[in-house]
Length: 59
Image (cartoon, rainbow, N blue to C red; front, side, top):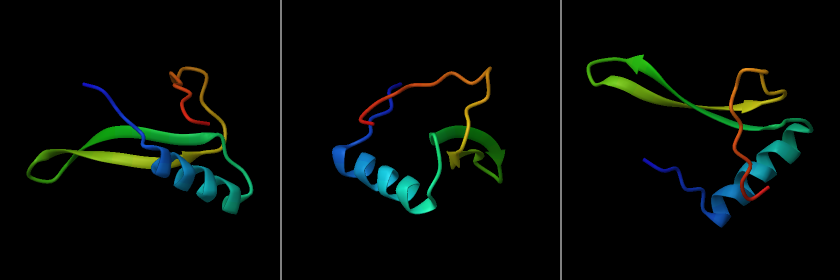
């Protein structure tokens, strides 16, 4: 499985981070949810945790 971030999506993420005035990037996760069992979670990250793997792309 691969994750692709388009140029326009990267620009939007960077714009959101700029509007917040802080931030390191975007965290993508999966959690259990409802009947289907899994749901994607997206959240802004101000500082990455030491144990969190980071992928830098289109920054």
